[in-house]
Length: 370
Image (cartoon, rainbow, N blue to C red):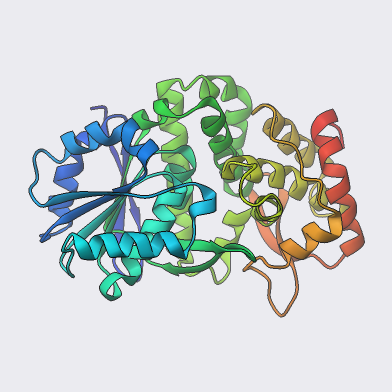
């Protein structure tokens, strides 16, 4: 096991740590013991995630007794209340009680759905997160947000429910497909845009190493992303203000996912499209300088070809964006960047410009020019 980094996340329900590094799964049993004494441990994963990391997870538990495995469909289309009910009923059948620990093992959907189930089961049981994708390790497993989708929009049901700990082993990322891995790097780019110009510049200079999964580069990117998110959510746990900047590109991306029935895009791919649209819209309304918008689009394009932009009309996409949970008083709000390394939330008052951007973004992404 390489050197682990322990990053504190502040929470009103109790602070917790994100343990990240290469090989940290070997310490899973120790983290469980450090988190408390539990009557049973329930590992909840998907068939795909468990096939990739299950052996290492069980090895890390060092023969801990009272361990039960549960699996469910972790496709985006399965991120719904039906999956929450299936998990909860499985916990009942396995005898999980209020002193049990539920451990989510997998990507962002696993963490969100299992976290929501844990927050509701017996009015809340202990939760731990073992994220196995780039998106989950850098973003969704940290900060306590859990939830499921409705047909009307993404993550409209959920709860803030922080885990006892997060264990992010960068070695698990080697099992990801190229598509899932590179899509996840969009979330890392996001952190550079909203909070760290040095990280953004590092990505511009070392993206090929990141895409090649060079161990040192990957470990640095995961840890730095966790540090940024921990800093933001520690200041704004319930998304009352500052935390909204973490959604740069997401309002656009969520609309694309909804428009295609959550079947065309991996989450990171939708965010990649969304960041280019947000950069372009920011430029068009005078918030984002042309040079910064161009750098954002150029870096995202280097991730590789994305699934096609949907055929939905701009009006339909705007309608879906209005379902986003960040709207206030009926107003659509977007996270934009006035310069790389800084972000804020702005009312999207100019619907004509927004619809124009929704028409232009596929062409800009193809041509690489504003």
